[in-house]
Length: 332
Length: 169
Image (spheres, each protein chain N blue to C red):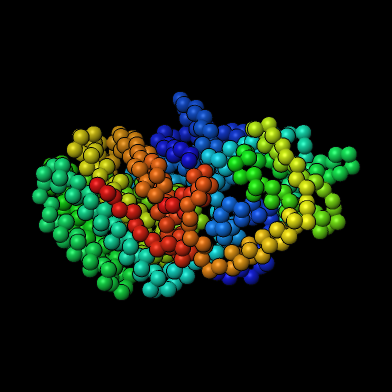
């Protein structure tokens, strides 16, 4: 598997023979294209069509973020794993309400299960009383299983998440990172800014992993396909947000690696992770994605990033009537 | 799942048949292997860097011959393999090429090449091989028309197979 490149500096991004080159006023950096999978671009870079063609030929995905670190969009190269059979099966499962619900429910219940795992970990470690929240999450999970409509299911997912977020202040100790409630577009405080930033990292990472499989990121099951360009990555990311994003946030805050000084105010209102904070968070994020756990069926260590790809494979197998999808559940 | 076009049985399908019927189903449905698998990448490199003086990658009726050359008036089809690990499958694949050529009135002999092992093996088309191949064609068509892929079964090829993450995720 290739590398992920985070471009924080500004300059020109171009093709030089068969290499990617970043040229700024002071730096000139060569990046081998063969070992690059995706680039997350935060800096103000200039690039041309020749460069985009080069990325397509080498299946390199580009994700763009604005000045505040908000996701702007992805240059998604031409599909290279085309299977008509898979696309049709995926569409069939999306159009059939029963089949769609079955998969959507697994995203919700799988996500809630992993939220519980994250809370149980901190209740054990920090000796924090989180039992009542964990119990409520179980109720939401059972309730989700009974739903017959996607929008109701989405509602429950939202409620479960709100309930889960009440544990955040208990785990982090509040202080300058007190959350009170979840706010978006724009985030109203530091922890909300951190959650939004890392959630978008999780979405693009998932998108890049789906690209390596045969399923189509545009056809989602829980998230409506109509509203956005990509939706399946949002579905699959639900499973991993508690495990990868939230636990990383707790670890960053508890170890004081990220502090109040790493945030800034936005001109239009809201708080965002500043340019000083971004590299710290991205480095920790990349390390977390590359850390491995033993895969019970493959019998070898796999990274969290690979686990995301395998989740996409599991969806693929489900829609091909090969093996029923079981969401990844963290063991501890 | 409906496949309205007739499937074309190419060399890789024959080789897959010898290894795993699930792989056959995947290939017919254009569910390609993981292209980043180390062994796939290594195979690609070996193919690119060996026998550079020969003609390479010759398309013939949906199959691709690695090497084609003429030796003392007879045509030789060469198939390059990374290792002799699945030599039976490689033999059948090459026999299939020879059979296809024969159906088009071209007589040829085959050569299996293992550049890393510095080994080669001759393959000739026999009546026995032809009957076997006819049988294999029928079975491949039967697997292709299954609604769902045949269930994953662990075998000795799983470990290094580029479908292993798909099968065992």
